[in-house]
Amino acid sequence: MPVDKAPPQVLFLPLGTPEEGTSLQGWLYESLRGAILGGRLPAGSKLPSTRAMAEHYNLARGTVQAAYQQLLSEGYLQARTGSGTRVSEVLPDPTLNAGYVRRKVVAEVEGKRTAPDTPWLKRLTQIEPIFSRRTLPNGLRPFFPHRGDISAFPIDLWRKLHTQQLRSSRLTMLLDADPAGLPELREAIAGYLAIARGVQVSPERILVLGSVQQGLDICLRLLAPGDFEVWMEDPGYPGARQLMDISGVRRVDVPVDGSGLKVDEGIRLAPGARLAYVTPSRQAPLGGELSPARRLALLKWAAEQGSYIFEDDYDSEYRFIAKPIPALRSMPGTEHSVIMAGTFSKLLFPSIRLAYLVMPPHLIESFTRASALMSRHANSLAQAVLADFIHEGHFDRHVRRMRKIYAARAAAFAEAAHTHWRGLIDVPEIRAGMDIACRLQVENEQQAFDRLRAEGIDAMPLSRYCINPRGPGLVMGFAPYEERAIEEAAKAVAQALRG
Image (tube, rainbow, N blue to C red; front, side, top):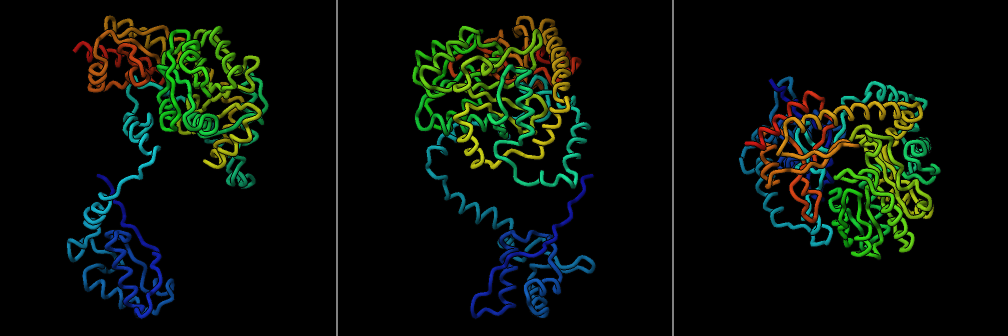
């Protein structure tokens, strides 16, 4: 049986000051009665004793007793032996009940109020954020994409490192931190990038943030304000597209194929664009890599136009058929034009909310100032724990371990698809990542999606990533699901689609 919550105990409320000519007893009575009717003192809440109330407000105890007695006699309060004085569950007049006031009176007032007519609010009403309450599924059902396996994270080790940071000798960790990020973490990230991504950068050129979304938001505000043109991959990551839409830039949707962004099309559509958003190491959601020829063409365009490239390097570490390919930022001549973004939410666990930008030298100061103004700094305690996690070699071991686990699950997913989905879903070769874009061999994508949801299967329609239609498809994740669960879910998919 559920345990009933204990009624709240009220300490003291700010009651204001008595008006001139009002007795202290009358002031206290009206203040408490108003707090009850307004819901500030909810039903069942316990009031301080008359002695404590008198001491706190510097009143005579008899004054408090008289005000309490009047409220008791009118039914606003009730007193029980051993339970103290509490707000009545039901007020003497139902129309005075706090719930009634909130539902009726407040609702009527709020119903007449409308949001200000601003461009931001107008645009916000036209999108549904990709990570809103309505878009996140309940639980972890196959085959929802963009998720890793948090059950495989070394939580006991993380707890140990966390405890070490909370020693009394390190209490300064609880104070404000450098808005660019803890020096220890920026040093750790720089070392990791040099080995894993081929990016040689000094720690002073790294900015630690809460998310890649935050980094892109700052880019749009500082580098492409107003109606500047910005390239966006199509299909592409919906969160990036939504940020562009809400910021008011002129989004230019550049098509993507198996070799990544069609740079020549971007130049044809918007040669003077201020910024290009790309996922060159593993295109989101199609999974391909930006070809060497297109990488060079993209860098040449940015150099000639004085434009910037936002490289979202979101999960390239999980590559199964070979070592991770070098980041775009690792190529010569990219120091001043490429802003590289990476996140630990994909590699460790989503709620860590730590990401980073590798900045051109002439932008690091302005971006740090913007970050400090918007969010002060990322969680410094989590930064310190992560710095230790990386420096002590745990991060590298965890990524290598998860790469093996995800590779095995990708193979199980491909095998289950081959066994159960012939004529239903075409699954391409899975070379990297935690999810894969699949082609539906049925005509109606939305109908297929609805059938899967009804059968307990979560996936993402490919159309949600696209502006221009590409044919029916699904983006399906495999990383968090064990091989047996993948097999059983694959059977459920086949049953749902075959009807």
